[in-house]
Image (tube, rainbow, N blue to C red; front, top):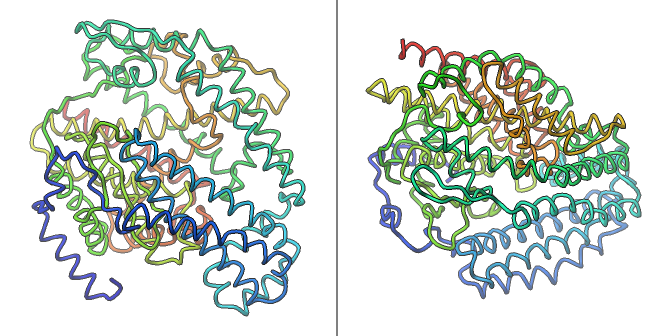
Length: 619
């Protein structure tokens, strides 16, 4: 599928099947079997096992390259190719094992198979731990000369080598690296302990709703009932759930404080000035990106407060409390089949051009996804890009509603991103970083919402889709930035030598809740224990990337929908770049500097325009 005529044929084929002509497996919403075809990875479990054993036997040979990287360019290239080939095979093995395990989590053999591949990754890491320190001893001048001489180094490994050299000031001796590696497990202790508190040790309350239904308010029970139609039910859900967290705030405070101190230890060990600098260094994201995001989110708060006032009006409430932020502004009960999800998504992404439509049309008609929930299947949704030589796989648990269709468009955005990167980059440069990952998925969501709004016939339909857009911007931009600001404050306090405790974290979080949600929203102080509910805080300085991604997506969506081929190609160039450069540099080449206010102001402008439309409909 490399010649232009073939791509044109696929585009025509995709456009011709917008009516939703799907294979039989996809039309049967009640299917009990997994829909994806894993035989494209390995024809059987036995074939997988044979490949695993063969790969395991090859891993120790990587140590034979130690001490030879500086010999000459062909030797360095051969060593890197050997490691890359092993990583590529293990990735494929992992995809099969992981997908099999998620088809039915009750089958122990499949869970054990996944554990075997994790062990195989560990073995490869141990067998190649010498590589980065040795490359640093070879030095930049010699490596640059090798890259200039050798096509393989230049085309496949130039970025890896440059990135390794960039991190030289923060790379320790082999002994120091070994010590830090051995510290990984104990440093994960706070996350494991907090998870244990949530999963088993906290006596979660049970309440009876106005419907007579009795619900246990653990994390899942809270998520399922926080948007209850009855306002008193919502209040009781929030009171009980966050009251339980408040009762354990000292324990959660101890675990999170230990996590923060672990971040500081790692930053100091690697000679970074702050924990934030250490966290951003992996993808070489400038600190200005993080701080500009926070500043611009705060500048945009008046529009968020406008949204909350609109929410109060649309829900016909005399005032607004924190427990009123989750009910939908307008209900929609229309059933949306998988065939309609596919056809609508393909129609919505037409502004991305015929090649994109061809790719998503062919992919969504193939057996690449497992779409529906069933007993034993892992919950949630994800796209697994690891099978570079095959194609992405998607696990979905779709409801037959707009939320399900939005999830469909989101995950297929990830998948086409992976396809485009794989088509334009070698394996070693195709894996894009988290900083870029959510752009393609959230842009597809925005194109879908714009398409549905354009198709809406009634005022209620239009308000429904406008409400979906506004809630997406609230939860993904403002809420995630609020989380990012909390993390930064917690680490700043620790680095300044201030005391950390559950009480202190709660006070900081309450101040943020009040600032972000405005003076007209009532927030009970017990709800400020919400910080203890957020497991992402134990993956430090991660959540800000949700906010930067939706900002970039909003910027590109506005440009694509109001522009033409140039704007579209700029965006597609980001997807095709994969992991061939640092993410902020890839975006700069597309005209977007994430260290400037522009992308965040574009998002706030989108929220303002959406609010204007909704208020006009309500006038």
